[in-house]
Image: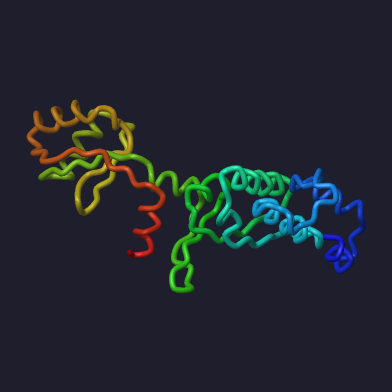
Length: 202
């Protein structure tokens, strides 16, 4: 790292501070070639911080790491982000991305096809109840008259409820007793991977 610090005009004090930030301050005289993959990833981040960037671009930063190494990199990213560093991360490991990301972008064939926040993604992937019925409009009116706060949406393949999920049996009885023919009620849960694959059209 000393070699890179010369290029950026950094001093030993700054090197020490950066190594502390990425959790490598206790390595002593250990050579970088003896570092684990996770340690080398953290060293790379420390080197990139020598120029005091506002934005860092990371390409698959946890690829090939064991669980301990993944947590180390995640903690470094979160801590630096709290200090004002913005990260742009390219990765296919969606479950891990969800632990650090605030904004998502989906790229297919070199084009940005969708962009959304982590909160929007959670709403799009949360559990819902799919009701297959003969009259979506009538069913929606009946449910809203029963519970004003019910969250429901008519889609081409049925009526979807995003609350009152635990009341499927009573919903079924209520609709049937009011003349709506119900052919299916099922819990629908879209996981992150399914959502991204759907958006990619695969």
